Length: 210
Image (cartoon, rainbow, N blue to C red; front, side, top):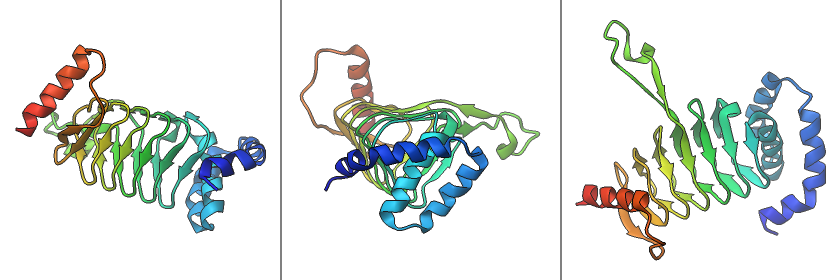
């Protein structure tokens, strides 16, 4: 039975648990998130889903979160439906993070929506002001294992980010991107109607690939 079929079967029970958890303090929910790693696989996934529904700014249906996933500033996180976030990922939504429907994020991926500045020389770099920029992962994106996604990036729909890539610039829809930094490898669907912004992004990635 597929995950979404299991979700549909137990959805009434999950909704009740979500409502009950909504009465609990956020600090307790965060503590329960850590403890969920100790549960058997399916129970852990179910508990993390119910917790995420209460911790995230918005969370859709059938969201699977693996063991060891760390969430920072979950209240600034938006997650769509039919999303999988596999084990040992690190998601920091300090600058806001938007994950659309049908997205799969493989294990040990890091997504960080801010970066450090270093302009104030009288302060250590770690104490300099942070520069926040939202990250958007559009519908039907597959992110390979060990990917690093930096602040301000927009990943277009139905694109693939290959394992180990470091994404420092936005990626258009319908392409495969790989490397450090991530560059266009190939398109995975025919060109849509002319889109000046998209064509500009593709041209830039191609130029960097040369």
